[in-house]
Length: 488
Image 1: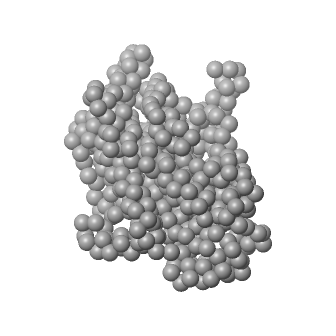
Image 2 (image 1 turned 120 degrees about the vertical axis):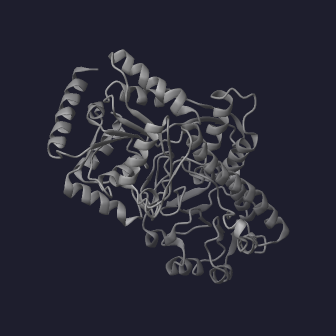
Image 3 (image 1 turned 45 degrees about the vertical axis):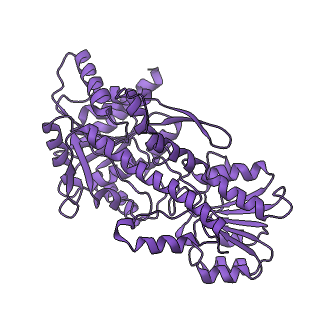
């Protein structure tokens, strides 16, 4: 550690002590990781249901993380959200002064509960056409994070893993590291280790997806499971959403990756049938709606541009990797691996539709993309399927205009994003793509009026958000296609 880092650490340590002196009598919850899960989990803990906690969010001392930490401590929540409860809970924690953000691991010394909400990445190697060639799971960053906890935390702390991890991680990785670090400190670890995976859904129900939703949990032993249960009951409305305890951490870890793999495979399955419907002249949306009338099939997925975000793009691979690596199986989960590849390649279908319907090729064509985020009504570009589509359009020579109501800049592609719909309506386009199903694009009179004033546009609705009446109006002067609809 450099001299400057020592000074920063000392300053942050004093800030933590001052924070805790102003929150005397409160148990301390430390959330490791201030990303899309950890930042909002911190707010939920700071606004507990049956107990008032002093909450400290810890992130790495990187440039981006420090920027986020400073914003939080200034009173600026760094994640755009359509959920009004996010800012409501943030303002409440500010008024109560029971939330602090820091990069100092000194916080772990003060914790009664440490919640782990950090990234665990899968390194995928794919071709330009998104054919999955290989993948690996690197636990090095995760292990360092656990080591930083073990070097500082109290012997009786509850360590709760929320991060989506390969099955086997709590028993084979977390527990041994904590015990090793305590051994080096010359003391015994008498604390608790549990796993309770998050089901966070950024969007209009961001807070509720944590506080007002069902939760699965376990511990490495019965005392740990009991501790996890007692803690979760203080922050989740378990009277309305009862907790589910599983027999061990292998089971809860498997539950999370199976839960997400099921969704990923359902999406991949519908992709194949969506293509079939287009070729057969069938409206796949009305087919699916008819099938959903059957109770056993209510959760069948609708078609779309593709799969994005941090979970569904990797979790099936975490499971397959665990099977081969943690549990020494000769074979992985081949269906789950194939689903990831199918989903990664989904945007290529949209590109093919555009290329086949735009006369004279895409070179110099003016293309407007409505929506950049991977999910409707959030500002999150992580692994968005729009990225592959944009790269293909740019490679074809198209001139892009990007719009998203929740984003001003696209870090991955280093591109500016417009947020004002009225402003982009003033420009001319050859192609318009509804690439994210933001609610602001649905039933938008201004958007439909814009289409009606144009002629010879090619419009591709990647998510089926245009109503039949809107499609008829737009198609009077323009060409309209919808992914999964072979009837138009």
